Length: 144
Image (cartoon, rainbow, N blue to C red; front, side):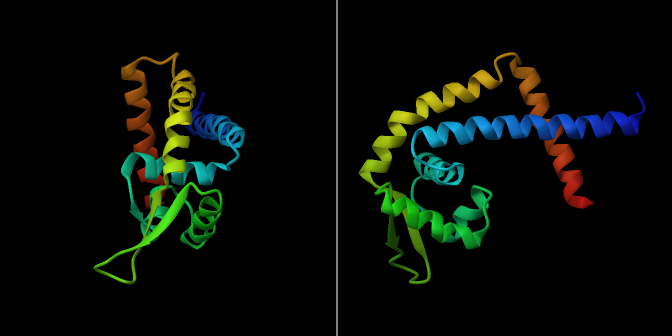
């Protein structure tokens, strides 16, 4: 197979794999009454604690224009609350409520196990190689 054709095949495989992984995450989030974006925000807050709302969008790869809507939905579900920064009134934080913390403690282990099963046919070195190789491709794509 020519290099160009091999590279096109690699792109197709990467996209199909990403779509399949996204479907697993989407299904898992839906099982718990959320969409993947809401789940991503809860995951961030669960693992990293209180975050400035303005920085959440970058960390979970959603548009900053959508983050207020997502936080509003999570507040309505009583999983997240806003709090003001005492040092800078321009900054508002989002943090898990007790209900949000309890939810994540309940669902996170199962979600993590599902993700781990996606990679169970790979050994540690293969997984590390995928991470390294896809970072290289991603960096190259950003430069294009």
